[in-house]
Length: 147
Image 1 (cartoon, rainbow, N blue to C red):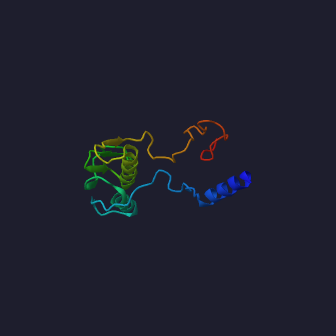
Image 2 (image 1 turned 60 degrees about the vertical axis):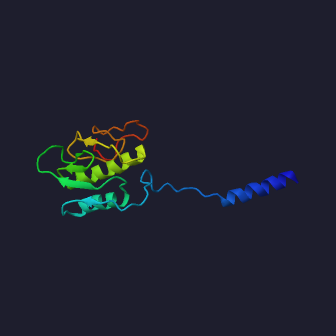
Image 3 (image 1 turned 90 degrees about the vertical axis):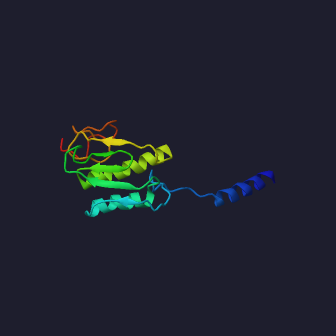
């Protein structure tokens, strides 16, 4: 009788449980309506603006495309008020870096960032090395390189 009762209680508790599917990964932000000031741009810049507008918890933020090469083509700097990059892609990478940093810190205050990629273009956040090997080697050779 005790076993049956424990089984029934366990079954009832299990049926009421729900699991997260994990599809949001680290992008678990609360919805906001932040002020974002940006120049006119294409789809990439519009995506950066939309993400910051919807999820940035800090004060008004300025996005600026700079003609001087202060950073690599897909790099960015953020001084606490202005996100600067020489390309729209740089602004998008910077926007996601800001949101990631905000999530890790638990606040948008005091964030200062600079990123200068070592290669001309950023590659997937993947364990493949530029020589065609894979970081831990468990899966053989990289599928992205002919080697």
